[in-house]
Image (cartoon, rainbow, N blue to C red):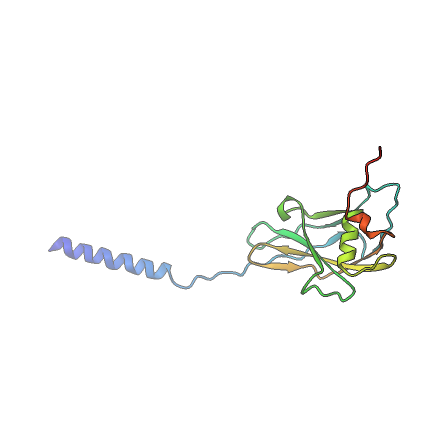
Length: 167
């Protein structure tokens, strides 16, 4: 009888411990801190030359920090003249599965972005871009929207096919 009484007390003690530990936890919501876009400037005009097809445009920013220390991933969103980032014209995830804080765009990639944002051949247009930081649970969008003015080449189809080999 004494063993049953002590098991009963032990059971009550464990239940009360569980009840206390399962009470409402005070959790702080995870946030991502603000970060600065570094390059290029707020507004830049790009003109590629045919003599150097290896030119790149670097879009870079400071790393954002999550309040709980989780890893932050990035994507660059592009929009046309409507500046509609709710449904971006194109989104590029950065290298290293989204961990890198820079995107390098070649002439060919920049022309594809330009075409998807509605810039017609033989016209110079404006591409608007911004950086979105994501942890998987929360996101933070940099409030600065940057502008790139891009002239497209005369033959936009040359951007979608590899250059012809010289024999």
